[in-house]
Length: 395
Image (cartoon, rainbow, N blue to C red):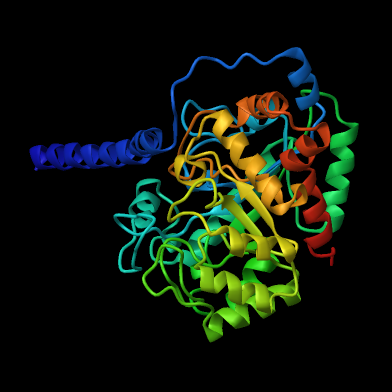
């Protein structure tokens, strides 16, 4: 009996150790393999470029950082974004996206909703059991992570819910000293499949703090067709009800990953301007990831704002020079007031600079003849203006 107890204890210890290994080591190994920074020599930033960069209000429309098991308040050796790196890059506002479902074999051409690789990641990171089989709970949990970060940040990070929050934050940033500036976040869901077909869940997520809703991700859902799905369809009746309710709530709409027909349908139906949080323009980077220029012109005419990405599928050439060329193309095509940054950091992308290195974009824009006004608009003033106009009023 004594030997049996020893054996059982040993087996139990090994099981616990294995779970601990899975919980603490595997997610980091996985993230380091897919959220990569391509090795490069340190960027040398000229004094004039750094001086300008330090005065900018910088905003990024998309990162998937809440998907990963990291202490966001401490600088990590993996991934692209955390609070210390945001502060070092002088980033004021970061939109945080919740990724809740992603198909096996994910690609830019054609995917179905029949599989999900996020479930294994959720289980490996030991998220609450409620998230293991509910994508609604996964969206809710990632929002809760942002609230905990704000609570533990000693005032250096806040989550914005209203126009009034945004105005207060802008004022606080303007009064802060370099190196002590606070950072703010806004919460987005990447695709509206977390609604699980229930419009009431949109109200629930809004009440909890959701302020931007995507429509589709890499597969068609109950709202309509994905840019990477199989149907190519536009808004379904349920999708139309989501757009109408989002407008009533003051919930902003992100059409990244939506099919062209869905984008057209939303442009017809929505009473508010749209966001395309991360992507590129087909006229300079042709491919399945980017919408055509004609549709993007219509998007801009309706007041839309596109975040230019930093990875190959969005801009083709993802060097700082290549990213800036896509920004210039967007300005010339759509107007400077419609162009912003949309990194897709921490979204299974390889980049050549993380958020702490954004001064290289400022310097490259100067080198390519951008005016100071253009730089300020693209780097964040356009997002500031958009959020002040389109966040809901405080209730």
